[in-house]
Image (cartoon, rainbow, N blue to C red; front, side):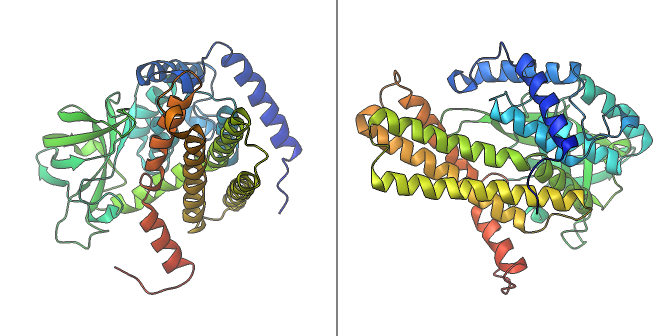
Length: 383
């Protein structure tokens, strides 16, 4: 496989770089900001993406996008990550909600939601995981009961990123308790009126995740996406868009974690230590494997294929690289360094603590290994 950019892709990458360099000129280093400050710049960045017509790269032109493919979106995200751009506050809307509505929505649903996402008027969150079924998504128990004109929904969702800023939710609920668990689910484009949202304090002190409670929340029939009982199929579409749009971000984040580790080692005067060099060399190889695997996945998608279980291997490898790099960086600080903020030790500790979530969010490490065991190694199911 040729991993080099084609002339067209390279020209687009350069166009993206020029725009990003100008748009990011006044944006501060996100690593040095509080959560409130990061959210402020995420909102500013979202507004700039919308104003610059970068919010719907892979959306069809007929729906206000640029009509480009998933690789173009991945390249844009990669170049933004390399430059340390804020994560857009409506990332779920641009990269998940919009494309899923385009794929499965009615013309009325598309007209109602897509323009607002491109303008930055509608902010979305993703209501999939639940307290008792985070990784086993099909076992969700949030229940939707048919009423006149729509549905009454009761249940709870958890680990919902940006729910405290969202006005709409990609919501999965069970509409048929008697059907097999994958067939009794319906996908809703739910207004968040009536949702109770509570922040979850993470181990690093941030509150980017939330839990949501639905107590007789009404959702109209017009907000069912893809038909009643077809929620699992629609949800797989959303997850596929999530994998594709973030594919190249993973290796950038892995490489950045390794580069920060090297910087700490130079500061501490241990960059030539043989054990450290061996450890960094292994991490660099793994980060490069994430990059190559991501390019292969995108190349397959561009050729009309569907990403398979290899995405689980990439996610698992990326998480391990970032966790290990952050752990070693904290170890280099030694016990006293963790308590001192002047040389960046406190920021390194926050990154280390945040990285613990990487083997939980987006599918736990246990689930990723089960997928690889069953779908690649063809081992018998363990559950």
